[in-house]
Image (cartoon, rainbow, N blue to C red):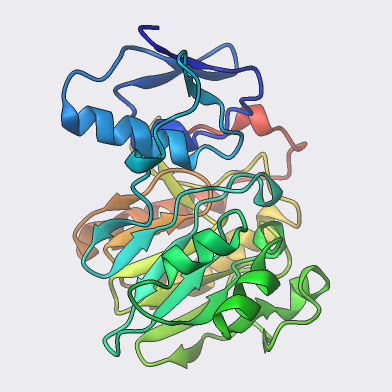
Amino acid sequence: MDGWYVDDRCTNCDVARQFAPELIGEADGKSQILRPPSDEAENQRLHAAVFACPTRSIRPLTGRADQALDPFPLALDDGVLICGHNSPHTAGANSYLLLRPSGTRMMIDTPRWSAALAERYAASGPVTDVLLTHRDHAAHGRRYADHFGARLWIHEGDLDAAPDADQVIRGIEPREIAEGVTVHPLPGHTEGSVLYLADDRYCFTGDSFYWSRADGDLAVAETVTWYSIEELAKSLARTARRLRFEWVLPGHGDRRRLPAAEMARRLHGLTERARLLRPRPIDFAGVRW
């Protein structure tokens, strides 16, 4: 429509719609362009969608998107950036850069790999750690960690996905891994799923839970749970009371910022709903974005 289209490689991962929901919608199991941008702000959001899309499916009729309009890494607020350039080898997952008071950064999950992108992510400060939330997002972890000279982290339950990790998280108890940063094991989506909590402000949830625009609330992807939906419910019940945060920052699904008290109320509600869930066949189309 009016100079833009979505090609047939689209996997309906929702990444582009997260950045520009007013411009990109969903129809027949894939994204579609709803209308062209009407001002510069919308043009910037469209190009964020373009350069985040893991299949590079959002394309101008004129050919290649203008590389000068690539906004990534893109600040979500003063303490965290989203990397964009989502990788097809991590199922199109979002990844983030957490800024620390020392001027260093921590990368949570990974974007697509290229040395040029790695240089861009480290341009404003060294990256000391690459924190993997679970096996599905491990594809580029070692390459980014080696490029940065950083430590690679993963939970023992998913260690076969990153057997050369530098730091192995064990058991189910929370652990402080850096000042202000705690890892909380959350088996369910996979056996080794974890979330990372930073500064009582940011909660990097991997694929354990996310913000659903369809529901207007926190949600779990119950139809894409590889290990155990019942274990995920137990993990939430064990962990929810220990978490205080404003931002939910997932690998798949949308992001959201709310006051910490409101986020706690919604997490309690999700925990109660999750207790009622039972195993279902894997069905990617069943996720309510």
